[in-house]
Length: 394
Image (cartoon, rainbow, N blue to C red):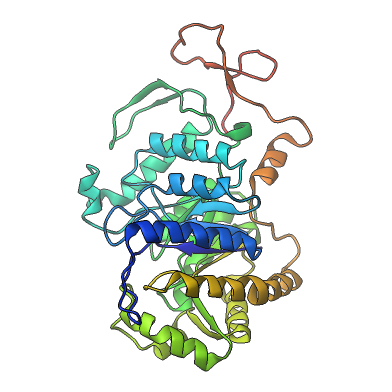
């Protein structure tokens, strides 16, 4: 089981100190937070994608490449890559490049995005969000698996004899999660392709997450990717940890009350009792997190939101100390001891390379410099031995 943190990249006023960081401060500090995550032994760092204030992460691959270059073990990923307002060709190329630069220590989570004004900024209509998401991912899926793509759709210009570069590292596409807060169609899409499904698991009661995950598991099995227990599930969540329950609530309450996503609504106590929000002592956070398995089954990735609502960076780094040194070691041991036989681990680049090649050397695509101009429909690549290779779909 993988444990990590995710950020939505908000720039929010600290209500305790009445201080709003600049974009420069927030960007610098989120990199510090990611490095701290690796230092304390976490597995994953995820960043969202936004193109409107008060968020800063308009270019996730740039930030994640910067973090990957300074870490050795951390998997870098997104907590949303917008499959609707991004051109799938650009997603294919940018994330393949990130895959190469990180040595395969990356994956990505696709989502529609629900901020209405963003769609027209990129020439799209939010009313077409769902069919746009379905069409764009179908193209992205092919771009990573076929050297030469001929394609016609409804939401972008056609492609003829197109090759996305660079090709995926070891000719193995990055692993894809599909993330959703409330949309079963996205769970259906994840199941259809045999990809992972990530439930936001922050704003809603546990019954909602339970229904969404169960639907995904059923459809995963329906499409022949394995039994329901073999489906790849990730959960979000938010936590704030203190030495005691009272300390945690006292420290977090002013940030909760002013948080742009749920402030000025239910009280901290009500929200904690009705949703997965875990605010309390180390043991209380451990106990509540272990409850997640009881209603979604065994799952592969748990990401915590720890850096939003104006929390100062020093407090976030302290939270990571709690998570990495006291909470996650217990969660690792307990989840492993409770995991049912046959439940797979979260896919990694190494595991996917082994699944495709076994003990053989991975194919290394390389442009065939001796071919001259490419002929439409033919591969511009050769395999490791120099012979032409047109790679089949996975």
